[in-house]
Image (cartoon, rainbow, N blue to C red):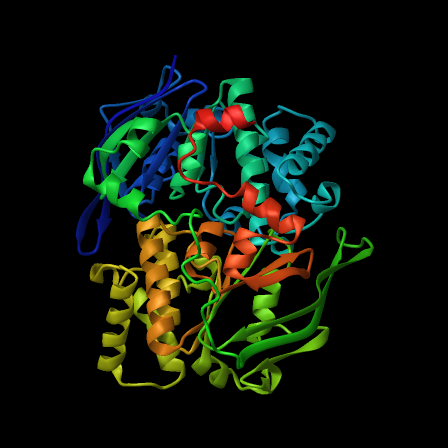
Length: 541
């Protein structure tokens, strides 16, 4: 039975320099219990199509469709209050791409989890809390009862994403729209979340729209696939036909760009340098939180005696679960946070002794969440040029030239030069963050999930760019990531973190081919591999 039917959808944005057609003549359908994957480059119109269903388009957008029906209801015919009361939540749920901007920073996780169910009269307060704790446990949140009293900033990026998923499932929607739901998740939790969505889809005949740039995940978890390019639907059909026998040249190009885990790593520890550029020695970091406003204090050991060094000209991949301490270590290495014990040295000098401008001249960060690391009041040209301004480097013309060069490297069109972050897709914002880091041509980069929000074609380009800079400039790179295929493509060495400790370290070839730690072996086993279909995955389970 047809659950969703969209015919001839068009979306146009009104911009200062004229209208921009972001979606053109898109037609999609979805049956109950079916999973549809929508793939394509960042900015191709995937998220806009989903937002149109939820009436969450920007105010500058206009939307028309020959038909937009959900479970027999004509969605455009519903007035505002009727639509809000009947559709968002209990009928259609949406997992957004950026959890930090979707969660209210001043409300506890527990309040945000239970508020909608209680307000709609679907559950009592005790029932809602019980269900919320159970869902947090199912999505892999440790100590779910205690987490109910915490705030979003007290969770890691991956944990916030899991909270968003659990919150969306609280109302048992008939259709779940998942926009990059596993972007910030490590491979073990990703597999757990996707297994949960598969189970719910089959148990409740829930429809699922999975918007993703991870074609391996789409191949494993969807029945049908739709490919979008520049706002148009260029190919759709069964997952088997589209992903393994593609007809359109764009689909073929996407598939050719997929990083793969099969075969030897591109860099099998081939960096010959021995001098340490950045080094941590016995670093320990504790965080103190409080349960409730006046509750007892709770101490969390984020880093437990971590020692790590990054050698000149190499790419060191730091992998591990969300909440294992990867981002905390990266911030300490950058000098943005101080350890409780131990020491960090940069160029054989304590990081704490270096002036911020000296650190910025040598190393630049690329943060995990581009939306919170970009100033929403600044245009792209100002954001990317900011490191040059702070260093008083060059005149206005030379800065603009450097900005344009950086934008071209990460495939950002020149027409976005004067756009604001809010006018970009998630992937485009991530490219802005990478361009800002590259504009000063630093000697070292510390990248926290730099390609997690990028589609495969841009991801491949960014990885090739990092590799090119490594060769041409001797660029040193610490890459914090959960994507094992990306690690396979770029890393010389790998360090594996688990619960605040380094549990394994070695060359990329040794760690990926013959892991010595059970946790590393579990990470590799959980990594999605392109070539496995949804039917194969179900048989394996």
